[in-house]
Length: 212
Image (cartoon, rainbow, N blue to C red; front, side, top):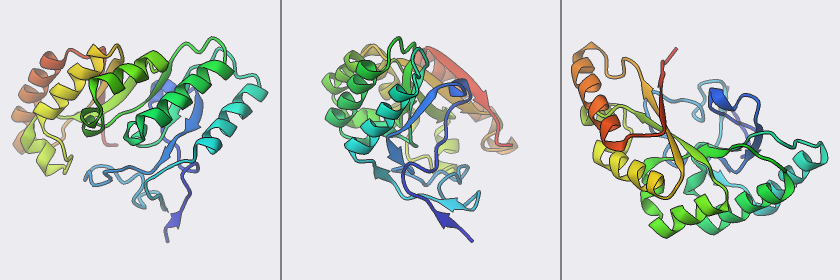
């Protein structure tokens, strides 16, 4: 049996955000087709449709963080890919976080490559100026063969373009690579092409992940 949850009730975060204030901005994932990810598709007995939370609900959560004096903590805007939300909406949230919570050392969120490409350079710059410090992006592999197999919905060139534009906007970029993705058959292509794409993008940081 799978239980469907509203947007604020399934929250995932990068390991580095373990001690951060978590503010749900979106629920689910606007793509939700990757073969290796079942987070919102019932893998843990839970499902969640994609949705952008009402602005007043997000602000209410930020007000709660202020009430309980979460000052000086990193803040993570949660959701599968919050950058899918309208830029003006995100800018208002980012500014509200900076207004209500003092000395936030890092303000971050997940970002899908195609969502970044749908935003103009001016929009990405606006997010940076509003206080977005870093985004976490699942590259997974630089191999187009592996990306197609995993139904990632994005190719290597799109990742390169998105990554460079994010960095040029003044936002740090953290990329995730999944070790062994594609299996033995595609291992050589996975390694070589991932190295090539990482070199092209030159992200702020990249991390290796496993599927276990």
